[in-house]
Image 1 (cartoon, one colour):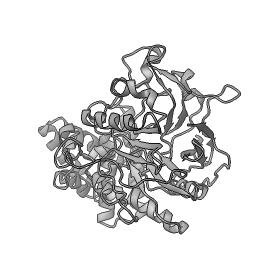
Image 2: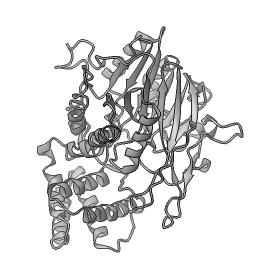
Image 3: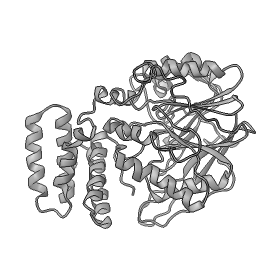
Image 4: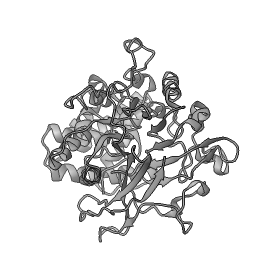
Length: 471
């Protein structure tokens, strides 16, 4: 498996293991084994509070989870007690867990908030109406433009640094040699620290371009929830250098952006929902100043161009309740984003998002909220570019099934699932990406093989698109 965790606490632990393994030059086999074992126990703890732990690493994982929770809860007495238990448990362990703990304790010195604090994260956020950016002309708008007849790649939840993530990027670049930019829908794992932004995002990108011996093109990214697990400080450091070695001024100034075509007929709007996720994990909204900035960009192009709107978090979901207090299909949309952008839906040609590690296309002209609201012209989940999931068939679509685009046989259009590991009975869903063809006003979605760490690589890449949508 890949080493994953679904909560901030679990992600912080795995991030600390990675950081310390790197700093102390821990043998790869030991670090990988520890991460895998920890990830298994963290996932178990997240799903079952009464879980029993049979291994020493399992006990330590639980202690770490409880310790970080105590710090978040400002329960210093409990935190001190748990820290003492951690020190006692790890004193003779071959992995430097004591330093993993100290990495987290030192995190404030590196600019990471020790609590899941919106206030702390907000200090890193760059708002167009606040100093020192309030007097910057065209703040957030990328200075350069892409050719009007070019192709643009889109990937989601790609920042894993894994070999199948690199494989997907290679296949995407081979399929579209005239691609002029790549847009990422967010999430650099585990917590978007500067080390992870390099190891899991920037370095793999540069490695693939070098391997293929092709010229590096601009990359733009928005933050997901994982980057904000450490206040997004690493994310902002990343975007300040991400495109520095490319001819021209391709700098991304903020956690949101506007990239346009040379003829002014296309724009790609990246939106920051990661900050809003700190206080509203299922239904994050966007900062008020950014809402107005995004609306201004949409208005500038609404009469003579097309807008591709990109968020990390879902606007609509057919497999996860975003609004759990509602009933029926009303559960499956983000009411905060609807309140902020609902009246602008008719001006958005495609709203594409990640976060959920899968691929789901939504029907054209979808009414949001169901049966009574505004019309979403096109919606697409594209969050499975590297983060693996087990098999997800149509049975996973637990609600709002009528919103999902189907094929000629009436079945949802979903990526292939393959059984690629004889030791793991569960098939693995293919990874996916999109290529927008500006010349022909369409987006093609493709799938490529995925694999678990240690399993036989599934290097398949079907030649035909999984789906083609006219824009």
